[in-house]
Length: 93
Image (cartoon, rainbow, N blue to C red; front, side, top):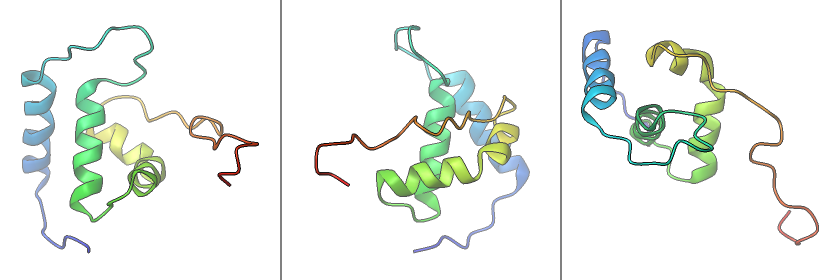
């Protein structure tokens, strides 16, 4: 299910700025690699284009890391290969 609605750059910037400035981040600073605004915006965008599973959302973010970083005006998402690795030896693979 793809969303074919076109959003202007101004609308996207407004959405991103609103989230960045109006959403408090109650998380503890330890272990935070990305701002809460970054996480929320990326999940919303992935959902809007039809990603429905956690793995689909993850692939959307990883495949568009450079663009999403520019959208958020921050450094791109780091892509360590083992960040979301499946546990081995548990019969899940």
